[in-house]
Length: 291
Image (cartoon, rainbow, N blue to C red; front, side, top):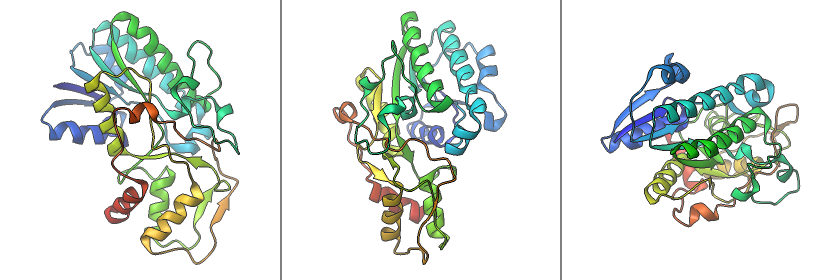
C-alpha cells in the first residue's frame, strides 16, 4: 500500500513506520521535527494514498497541555486543514487519532470509578473536555463526522495512556523508568499520586487500529487496558520488578500539573475484536531492559 503518516517522527508515528516498513509498504512521512509542517504539505500535495494515519499534533505532556494551551490549540488548525485537504483530494481511508482527553472532565473527578465508554461523548451535545488538547481532539472528531458526508472512510480511535520503550520523558511512565534506572533516591510524582490512568502499550495501540481497519469496524473506539492504575501503584510496580526502590519516601509534587483524577477505559468495543498482548508488567520489564 501507499501510506501517508503525518507526525511520523513522534512516539506513535514511529511505531507505525516500523510496523508498515516491516510489511514492505511505501511510506510517506511528514513531521515538523524535520522542518515540514503538514499544513504546508496539504497545500501542495495532490497524491492519492491507500491509507492515511493522521497523528500530527502538538501535545508535549501535561505541563504543555496546562501551561501552554494556545500552542496546543494549533491542533485545531492542523485538523481543519487536514480534513479539507482529504476531501479535496478524495482520499480513501483515514485513521484519525482522537484522545481520551476528549471525554467530559465531569466523569473523571477524584473518587470516581466510572470507566469511560464511547457513548460518553455526544458530538451533538458536547461537554467540557480536558483543556485545549481535549477540545482540539473533540473538534477533530466533529470535523470527521462531517467529512464522512463527502465520502471519506474515517476510523476514529481514542487512546488512553499509551506507553513504550521510546516514549519521551514528558510523560509519567518513561520518567518513572528513568528515575529507577538512575536510582534517584528523591523519587518525584506530580500531584498526590492517587490520580489514575489506564496504560496500554504502543504495540497494542497500533495492532488494534490495524485490526479495526481490516475488519472495517466503525469508530470511535477506545484503546485501553481497562485497568485503573494510580501513579503511586505504577511506581511501586516498577520498584518491585526492578528490584530497586528509593531510600527516601516518594516526594509528592502537589505544585505540579496533575490533570483529571480518574481516567480509565471501558474497552468492551475494542475487546470484541482485539485483545491487548502486552500487560503492564511485561511493558515495565521491556522498558527496564531497553533503556
